[in-house]
Every structure is written in structure tokens, then in C-alpha cells.
Image (cartoon, rainbow, N blue to C red; front, top):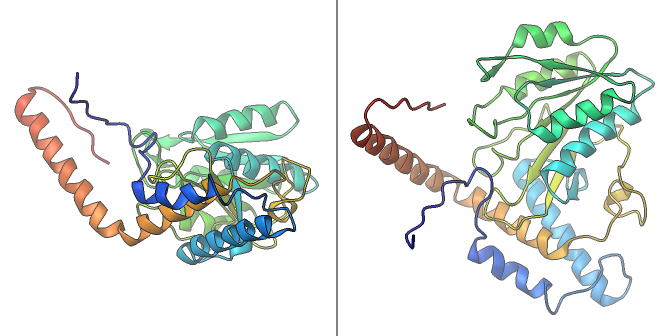
Length: 286
């Protein structure tokens, strides 16, 4: 088959040519280590700072609240493990929804082996979070609630702002995995303590993402070493990946409205063609 159609953008997108162009100088000439004190290092360090400022401006948070990671899985692990281990004196209870990504659910299983308790909050027909159950589950031992913004399989949006407000009233940290929604629809981080975002679902490079950690959040790092990322994620930074991530974010936010119109048109066309050509099918659109 020469005429292949790729229908898996929810899993990963192709690299935008404009993103690649932004990355190339940092794969060849600007190859310094950002932790080095000489000009090769300070030059790329400035680019990391600028990338954080760009993303922070669009998310309406502070640049120092953005911690670059290797992607969504690492960021989600960092959020859950980092919070529960830093706050074990307060409690040992976390709450997640039943439709979270596997990296969240499997992290909870791992934590259960280490004396931490977790509740999996059910959803209505695997779609919307059961709000009453969530309110009942939060108790004096609860230290974290984690609910994704957009589901990675069916795209359902959860009311994360309202959930975050509830958690704030109960003095509980709230984390949301926004890998599927970031760059496609606005994400309000006002009531969110920790937010996971990544690059390869918005036409950026694979192997880079970030965890937004709001100020005064008590969290312990997963990685220890050179003290990069304010001591919260020690490892040599993926400079080209970070530059590409920031460029992809810039493009997605600038083109969000026109891209959403284009995708809505494609959805309508696909739905109509399937209904016309294949009898007896049922299409679920969330």
C-alpha cells in the first residue's frame, strides 16, 4: 500500500518541519552542556530559560514552576511518587480515577506495595468521574488526587478546575495529566498543583515533556545527581528536545483555533462517509 493513512495522532504525531528547523542548530553547532560554565554551556542554558518562559507565559504560571522531563510517563511518576514520599507524615492515601493512563495506575500499584493506600475513583460508563464518590473518598489521610484532563482513549474532558478547587478546600494536592489536551484546548492551571504535559502529541519531538510544579508544593525528586532543574530532576538536559518542545507549544497555541476548525471538519467528513458507506455501525463521539 503506497497510500497509507495515519490515524494514530492521539498516540503520537509527526514532527513539524518548523520544529525540526528550530532543533537542528542544537544537534550540531550548539552542543554545549547547560551545566557547564563556559560559553558553550551558558548559551544553551539561556535557551532553556527562554523555553520555560515561553511555555509558562502560555500556561499562565511561573517559569521556575516548569520542570522538564523525558515525557508524560516520567512526569506522572514524578508527581505521584514525589508527592507521597515528601508528605508521608501527613498521610498515606491517594485517589486516582479509573480511566487514568497506565503509568498512573501502575504507579499506584507500586505504591501499594510500599504501605501507601489508593482509591480508584469509578467513572460513569468509563466517561465522567463520579463526583459524589470523590468527595466521600477524601479523608484526613488523603495527600493527593490525580485525575487526567482529557482521556487518552475517548477524549472525555474532566472538570479539573472544579476538582482542583475541591482539593484546595480539603488541603489536598491535585495533579492532572494533560498530555492529551495540552496545546489543543486551553488548560486552566489556577486550581492545579501539578500538571503533566508532553511534546510528541503536539508535533514536537519524542522523549521530552514537563511537570508543572506550583510554588510551595512539597515534592521530593526521583533523580539525584547534578542538581539540574532546581534540584528536582538531576540529569543532563535534552537541549534539542526542549527547544523543539517549546517551538511546538508556540505553534500549537498560535494555531489552536484554526487547527480545531480543521479537525472538526475532518471529523464531520469521516463520520458522514462511514455512515454512508458502512451500514449498521455505531459511532461514539465524546
